[in-house]
Image (tube, rainbow, N blue to C red; front, side):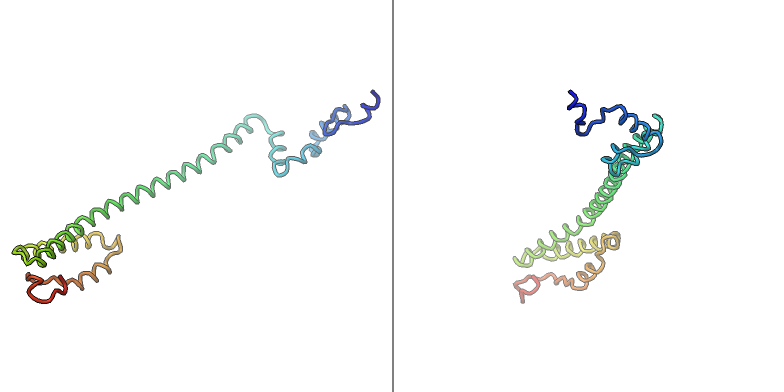
Length: 174
């Protein structure tokens, strides 16, 4: 029995003198040895041992509230970006409708010109009217979509052929 009393158990402080010395050290402000394993958390642990319950609950609430606020801000920012992107998409669709109509009219005109159909003048007029609608949309949205230079290039190169058949001469441009 005396052998066991002389051999201290590893990691325990069962001797009353050790318990008293640790208790006195924590009251006097000296850091006892059992704080050594807390590492960088030791200042917070020391502070929590000193402050009252209301202050502790305030700190814990703040610790939970701060990440929630940051995540809420991030969610708000992402949602706002998505809404702005969707609004730009809707404007893009509005811009593209007359472009698609112009392409369809150009295909009809090309078919009429290739076949030598009688509706070639009407198809050419429809292409011209569609291009004017695209030009109106370009005036509305060109600056926000940054398409002014490309549209000007297309407008400069635009060579609507007279209402003649491709078979009446060169097939170039049909």
